[in-house]
Amino acid sequence: MEVRQFDHGAIQGRGAGDGWEWNEARRICLRLAYRYSSNPSEAEDIAQDALLRAWRRRSTLRDQNARKQWLGAIVRNEAFRQHARLRPDPVSTLETNQGADDERVLATVEQADLHAALHRLNERDRQLVRLRYDEDLTQAAIARRLSIPEGTVKVRLHRVRAKLRREIGLV
Image (tube, rainbow, N blue to C red; front, top):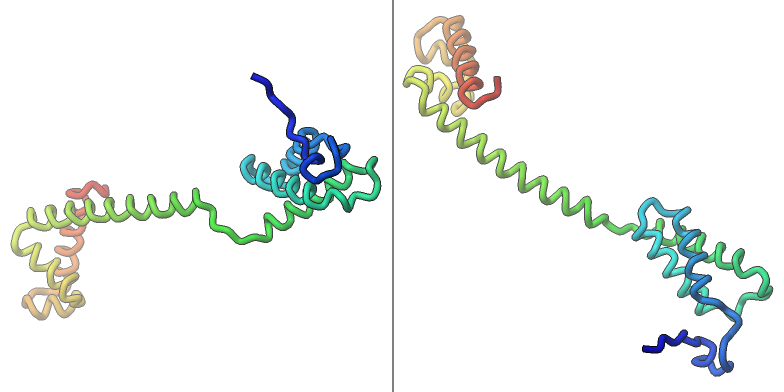
């Protein structure tokens, strides 16, 4: 099987070859793009865009001996254009979405554990928790409603919370 080099000059009607070695130009662009980018795929994008721009604007090169400098300027400008574009990073978006799913699952499991631990409490302790957290009553209001001293409410709530922490494994 014969591999042929693509002759860009022939397409433009200028005859065979235009004095450019495009594989070498690609290597130069890629090497320079790595200086402006923190990841390889972004560097490849910069190099490809720069090479395309160089191909389109190759007739504007005044000094054929200054090709590397000319390509360097194009790569630099493409890198600035690339960094100026505001594009979301698909990896961080994916990680954020996956993290949210994980957090929802974890919250559901924790809530189920809490409900199970609440059902294992005796009726008196469940009533204290219900008054404090479901009805959002203060300790003084709970003491008045149950006709017990406020200190007793404080101690019982403290013990119930400690018991729940042990039940669901937070301690």
